[in-house]
Image 1 (cartoon, rainbow, N blue to C red):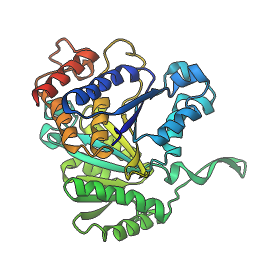
Image 2: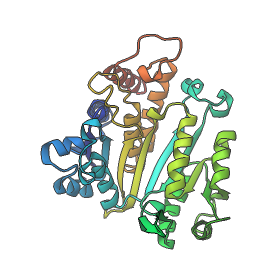
Image 3: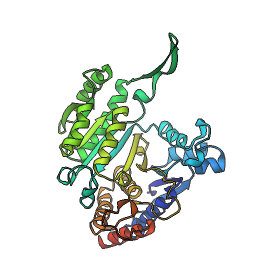
Image 4: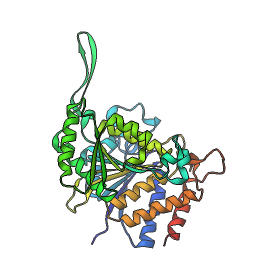
Length: 367
């Protein structure tokens, strides 16, 4: 049986630095757990533009379609701000999402106990928080037609169209229900069925799909109330399923409950391939952070946790994903901190490589 395949696209800014630590983790799993991957690397974003004049070549796109999973670092930076829109670094990322048809975006919001004081909410509200937002990623108001800025009666009018088909809602709902089945079997669907026809359809379709997952407790909530509840009592939720626009907003809200946006991973999943695995891309939520690029200050944990998500959702290695997550939890509990996690008490922050060192040591200790 061939090894699972992984395409690494480190990208720009701190992307290559944090990805170097992920590659050390991958090597550890091969050496210590006899878990080997066929790893290839290529360029995306500004790095691809610098070499090829485009943010993603057709050849790289073809590779992404063939592998079991893509692991992406970050794209963009001020050096590319004045490029034509069609070749900006972010267009490479958007092309990957579009052509791989990655319709389910998984955004976990997990608050490590050691970092609970970083949240703007009270510690007892967020300590132990572990929720997953499933955001529909390829439709909705960001893609609907008609759209644009037009002149009507000598006045500019901006138009965006919220449009969902039954099939688009259903496939995302199934991904969310499958996620709930692997967690605590609770799913809250969020929309605005009180004022939007697309919300009525959303609620109807999610309810219909629920018939195939009777073990899951399904609730519905208006998205504005959902935002309030995320701040009031976030631990009432386990899995949240919502549309592209609301998911964009609610996932950032949930992420900041943890107090550490730069600590969080994400996954984007698509339709099953011939081997039954979904097409998938994993990436940290943080950006390319060009202000600290090349200074060994970047926190690699979000990118490492993105690989943990790949272990769980693309490679059916849930126990090994938990091993890696527990190792990170331990080093944080032991006080390991990069500069972005330094509290008011101060101290000497770890470099990017040193954080990788302590995580590898914790993995060794887990054997």
